[in-house]
Length: 110
Image (cartoon, helix red, strand yellow):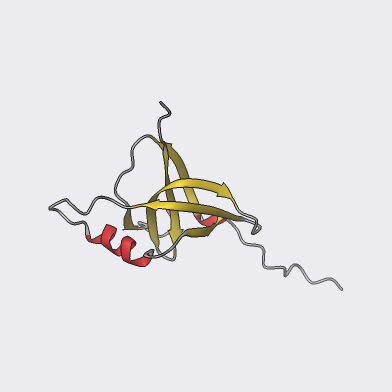
């Protein structure tokens, strides 16, 4: 019997770190984006409700797939069991170095 795997995706969104679980991850047709689909959220039967997971659930309600910029992704892990998604502060300024962004402007010639 084939064992189902899922993926844990950790990415930056503004000044927060998001941790999501999804069934599928693939490179996108959009240049420099990663496609994440089949988002998984924890069971609602639990007595303890995590407010950050509820915020994730409401933020991504009705979303079939998301496209994340490759430079925003910190880590993708293939895991055997899904966990609870969460949103956390990114920590102290400077603990995670953002990927440099090319702006198109360079040294002036002439």
